[in-house]
Image (cartoon, rainbow, N blue to C red; front, side, top):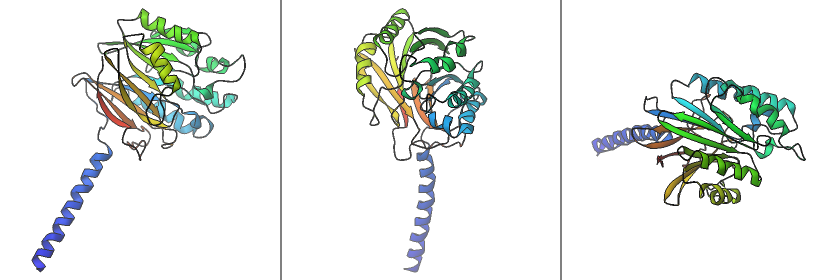
Length: 305
């Protein structure tokens, strides 16, 4: 009986060790890869609290992206708005501009406006345009055109043999911004269309009112749109819809209520496997935690185009 007890005790210890190892693997089901056939698009959004508090984190986020450019084949950065907390604060605008402009001349990027980036009245987009308008992209050959005070704009990005047109639309767009997006997607039908905006999905990953409106009035009208990217709600993950016979992947990546260590979503496009892997990762802490209480902020989906 004693021998049996000792044996059982040893087995319990071995199982515990194995489970610990397994748990470590589960924590990072999709670690970032550094391979020639994998290209990375990084999604940032709702970084406004760093502008009013952790300015060091703000700077380190974008410094890290530049330093990791070659390691992870980082080809493009998308920011879907709320770069500041208080749009009337010139100090916050300066902090956000200093941090994000570290990408200039290093990695192609685009930044649209969120609700916190707009002021009341006729000068609604003036502060955003001042710090994140055309001056920021004056030397960028990938920049296309903008619509009225940078309420919308587009960029032409080539990643490996994939030619994209990214259309950025600021929060609460007017019909002119919607028409602008449709005109751009129609003009570049031979490119993979990606719609980037602030509000599109709820925390539970369903489409919100603006998402439903843009899905009907932009995505459904343009057969080359295969992906949407947003922030606003505190959540991270994706949904996949079938629209007019094609798959459309909608992604949300907003970590402001998950942690304060500069977590972003890294989309790794694997040309060999034809997959997109979404990975929540902080280049500052090295953590893959993201939203610790959710499973949807680490995912893999087939490339829809």
